[in-house]
Structure formats: C-alpha cells, structure tokens
Amino acid sequence: MAVLLCLGACAGPRAVERVDANSRAAHAGLLQKARTGHIDLYFLGDSITRRWGGDTTANILWRIRHGELDGVHPKVIVLLAGTNDLGSALQHHADPDRTVSCATSISTHG
Image (cartoon, rainbow, N blue to C red; front, side):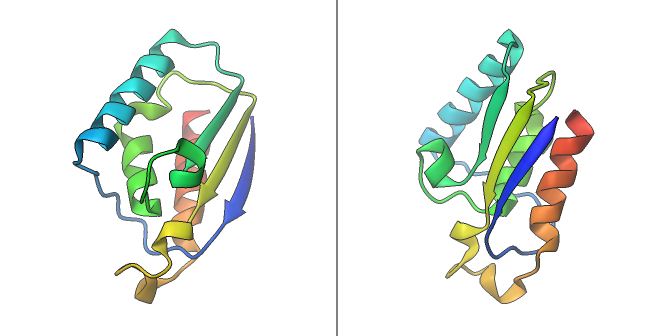
C-alpha cells in the first residue's frame, strides 16, 4: 500500500472526536463503506478531502482509531492533514509528529 502525504502544520498525537451531527453521519457512512470492502483508493483528511468542514489532524486520528480503516486494504491512501490546525488552538503545538502519527496509524491498518 502506498501512502501519499500532503502535509500542513500538525500538533501532538492526541485523537479528538467531532460530535456534530454531520461528522457523526459521515463517520457512520465511512464505517459502512469499509464493511463493503473493494476500496482501491482511499482519501483521508480534512474538509478539503472529505467535503465537510473543520477536521484537524486530531479528528483524523480519532477516525482512524475508531474503525474507518478497519478491514480496508486500498492500494493507495491519500492523506491531506494539518491545514485546519493552522489558526486553531492546536497551532501553538505545531509539530510534524501528528501527521507522522496519522501515517503510522494508516500503515498499521495495511
């Protein structure tokens, strides 16, 4: 599996759930798609990638750790992470380790 990274600013490797209805519905939909299998190309990331706003790297880590890649074995994963960390409360902890944590979490599911 190849992982293509598009990196922005990142903060420490904690995972944070988004609790708004749109994010929960999107997560549930992605879990359902994961159960169906046959995914060769997987886009994982912030609002530009997933078409809903505001995901930070902490939210992406939460989604990975809560099943979005379970049983999914794509040939390529495209990760766009860190853009929404800029200007947020997380920015003062800017550290590439968070994006590395996202990539590591992805690779452990492959």
